[in-house]
Image (cartoon, rainbow, N blue to C red):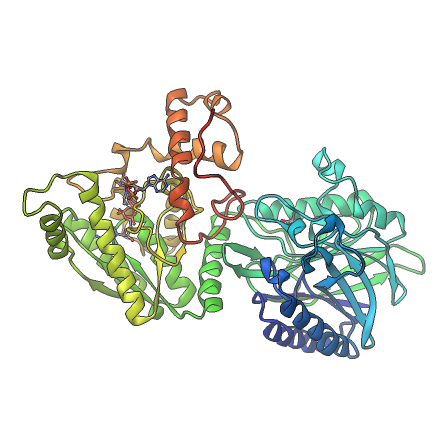
Length: 562
Ligand SMILES: Nc1ncnc2c1ncn2[C@@H]1O[C@H](COP(=O)(O)OP(=O)(O)OC[C@H]2O[C@@H]([n+]3cccc(C(=O)O)c3)[C@H](O)[C@@H]2O)[C@@H](O)[C@H]1O
Ligand SMILES: Nc1ncnc2c1ncn2[C@@H]1O[C@H](COP(=O)(O)OP(=O)(O)OP(=O)(O)O)[C@@H](O)[C@H]1O
Ligand SMILES: NC(=O)CC[C@H](N)C(=O)O
């Protein structure tokens, strides 16, 4: 039997659009001789649908699509697909909400009807996941015989609990172990597994180890696409019983991978071979993956929210240069506008660099000096007296720029991209209603050191970001001669401390024990904690590390360590 892995990019809530994509993938799979097509977790709704799952009308639309579209489509080709399904009976916990009845299900349709349903057993509820808010876990797991093949169906998190791989178990149940004990010949996992740097390698390694442990081939079908801050890489794959990757779908793009599943002789082990375009070899994750993730994240955020074009304030600095380059790659240079807004503190070099960058990228460029507005503010705020040169005055420049960008956005329909990187967002080195004004924070999860890596990657073939931008000391240019390092430690040090505190969730003592000045560590932590109020008001940021600010890190604002 041929199995098609349909790596789709659904739009959350767009059930009609998602069904159209499903139909289209099925036509292609039929053309390639498939006897079963597999779609990702919650492919009908897109993942994560969040509180749409609490809406009765939404759940009814899902039901209608399953009964009216998916089931009839399975007359032509059997379908395995993820969707939320209402349960029956009394909800646990005494809740009377519809959500308490929901299961996150893998539905196998054949011949026009539902042939088998396996609900998700392990509901991730950490970091960006909050599935227990919506779903009940499956009570039973059982392999199903389909076309003479014993299939063990799992949904994303169900395969992430192997005690031998992790040296621990997060959940009591291990669905894979149970299904294999139930004589599963082929494990299939439908997923919505978001990307972060290093995740692809981890996933492939874990799947290979599971296949080897159980001597079973595994088919893994992941969602692709950007949904708000989450970016799904796809990278669906098939692993044979010896743990070899025998088929690999694209990363960061839709794909259809077809596999031939057969027996080596009657009663022999199952073999799995990619048909035609299955890419061989393992993905080697480097900075290009972060680049592609961000490009997809920008493109999908705009497409799915109905924007075509974006604008970026170009300071001649590294962050706005990298943001503009990513936007040009995502949207096409013709859909990106760079706006330079020099003030009395902008160096001539920065103004030239902004212009050259725009030329190199082929994006539109405007220069709107802010001196007149800045002077007017200073005069009005100081009642005609001399400026004080304090922080309030410095920040006015960032706020004038934010206003200008939002004005152009309002009038001309551009989405404003903010440029703050993770290191700055962490310590609050950004101005509320100033450079934080905008709709999407492209680099919010990219530490400053990684921003430089991205810049070098963007320049890999020719100089797009002027060399001078890469070598000049980072500066907010809000007062004469200001450089970031006046207020912050060197970014290499800052980023290492931030990674330990945010991604690894280490405490001050443990971080200092890595060789950092204990007072500096405490100061950085204080800044991070104190800046929570800013991040709560920030634009959503694209996630590319294992712990981003946003839904996966929920900290109180009004608290103190005591
Ligand atoms: N807990 C809390 N909850 C809610 N609001 C709170 C708050 N604490 C202060 N605030 C409010 O926040 C205000 C302070 O925040 P804010 O107005 O942003 O100003 P602030 O953080 O004081 O200043 C901005 C900092 O970012 C630096 N900067 C600015 C622009 C660009 C860059 C760059 O290189 O990218 C760096 C700049 O040099 C300065 O150090 C307070 O005046 C108060 O209104
Ligand atoms: N002169 C300017 N013209 C246009 N936009 C500006 C200007 N100065 C600052 N901005 C906008 O405000 C953002 C914050 O910039 P700032 O220079 O203060 O800090 P930064 O974090 O070092 O950023 P960058 O590396 O892009 O300079 C910039 O990325 C840019 O979008
Ligand atoms: N949708 C899910 O269950 C995702 C959880 C899983 N551990 C992952 O990130 O791949």
